[in-house]
Image (cartoon, rainbow, N blue to C red; front, top):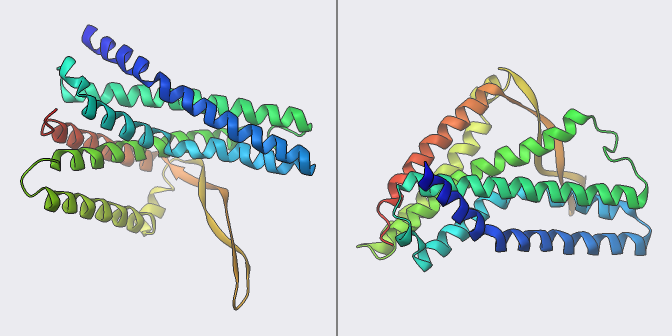
Length: 257
């Protein structure tokens, strides 16, 4: 496993620039929100932005994986690490998840500082389990999106430079659309509701709702709300993730780098 530790070390060093950029981005948005809150004497602004900076980490792993994979393919770094595709992908995914956890911890720290600055309760009337529900929802959903992002990227990358390239890319787009429709249909199905009852635990769902509506006007708000998930759904999505990861490994073998 010495080659794998070498891959982890390389991917960790390779990710440092992106990680520092993530911290700077969070710090910049946080600083602006605090300044506006003090200016308007409205702490709710900084607190809302603080929660948002935690929630947007749902997109951290998929975005990070696509950027890093695209960069490695362009620079042909894998030529210097001729290791199995599953090792290359799993190493990057592990480092991406680790960096995501560190970035979330930084975002939580910034939110805690906001609470201290404006002398407001840290949990805002929520229980500790509800607060952790937000974190594991962001991490879990982000990881699932990350696995699919790797698969879709590998489908696209495997089509570049091949015969019938445009047709292959179009098929990749069609696959992405079908995947979205299947997920949406499953979430709205009775099977999904039934599985939610098997070993249920609290999670946070993110969505929109109409808060003010007239004949000519709708005011829509985006926010988070408590929901239920289950161990059965966790097992199902883990199995899907493993299957999708194996498909990605297969696609990687088709990519000439």
